[in-house]
Length: 225
Image 1 (cartoon, rainbow, N blue to C red):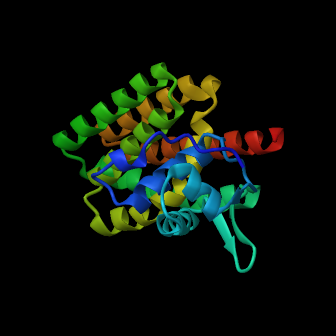
Image 2: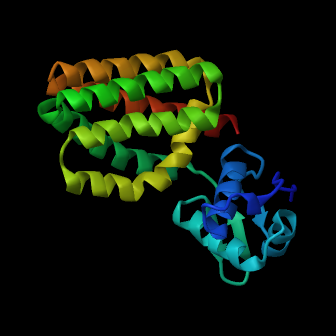
């Protein structure tokens, strides 16, 4: 198991130690430093990060909740593998939720919502120029979050928020491909235009195309592996 790059966790004083360990592990997994199937050994991680085993154990449980780790009784924890079935299951759910969100947003959005969505869209485009995958994934999430806010449906937003952590790994995977960045940008712009023009039918179709494209791209990555 590789050493986890980590100069000083204790400098991050605004967060509980378990959260800091979690974010470090999460970043290592998402960026491929800890590939699927790698063992998550508490003792090694604790020593590498200069912390006790307790925050490491808590962080691994958080990774499991996000779908990034699996814990087997008597066998310990490993980085979770990503299967086609996993991708299909997660993105089918996301397609239903996001198309509904796009429809409601196009019907209920305010001018303030449009401004937030426009800024989020531009932030994603700026992130694509930096080629920071982590930043792009974060800004992509912010763009979709702005759509959820524009639905003015708290229950829908709650349901989507509850599944957000499990979706992030897949979001990270599809923004890795630089070739797809112009397509993602154009799809975001089309979704924005549909919502701005209150065209619910076009918003639904464009969002579905957006999610389907992500699923196909991740399938290609899994096939390449």
